[in-house]
Image 1 (cartoon, rainbow, N blue to C red):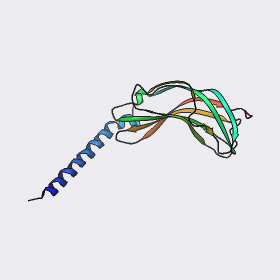
Image 2: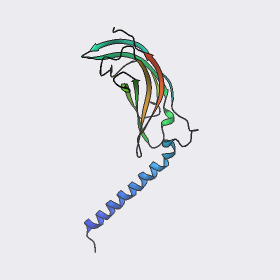
Image 3: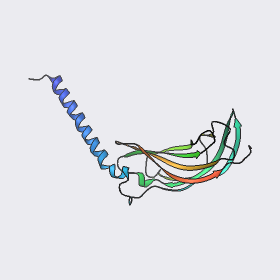
Image 4: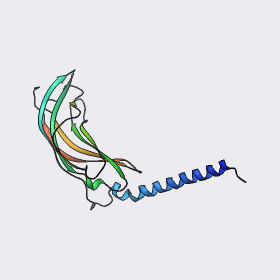
Length: 175
């Protein structure tokens, strides 16, 4: 006859195997939406990511630094399904300089946990994180602004999606 410890060990690891199997089933059930097999599924809509005002553009400690305000309007509710825990949403500034072919800077972020929070309508937001370049190359630079959302499921793979917002050229001189 087996001892209580052996029986408890068998029940515990059997339970872990059942949980693993159920997690795999949950991941497979959302795979269709995650990999976007069907293009007819509704997709999140980014209406606006627009810079309202450039507050300052200065040299700060050997690097260029810009502060600005912007508007964000988007409906991210189609990204929600039963296996989604939350979305990490952020505004991304992307630009090229002579030193670096690709520069990406996060200006603002938010965690969205419910479908009600997924309808973004933010106006005149000041950046949470300044637009800082590694060198003095922000002046007269064309910058693309995107709204990016990172899917964080209960189980399964993480992936990101983005919507284009706007494009703006920074001034040639500091102010």
